[in-house]
Image (cartoon, rainbow, N blue to C red; front, side, top):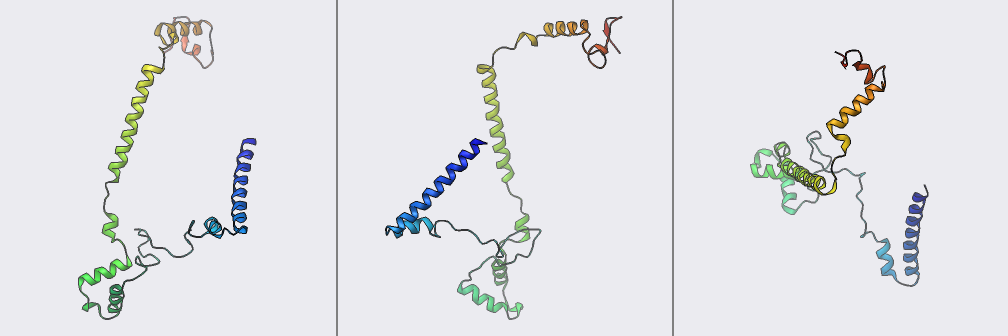
Length: 184
């Protein structure tokens, strides 16, 4: 709790210092420094309340056109669009489509080769991890303790059976003491 309080205090102090520095510089006539601190050119944020263009298969008609600022030739084509469409050539129709949409459904549904990059990267990191594990087994870890030996495990199991450890549901409940063998 005190660690979080210390971090919060440090952040608040640094923000306060930067604001007071900018205000002090402005009061002393350093308007250029002040404009650098509070200028809109430093940090710009998108206005997400306005409609935006997106290419999605489940949302086929975006709210706005792909091209927002039309060139002179595109404006002339938009005027020509208001007349009969039979007078438009195929290239003009395609250009009108590209003004409104960035990709067609066929282009959106096109398979990408991104999966190859993902699988390759995953395999690379699996390989690096395997090399690290092999290095650790060889140089970091010591030999296995004696309690992992088969003889030790057999002696430990025999001792647990002799002590009748957990006779209701555990190991001793599965041992037949009269025949000296596991119950079937």
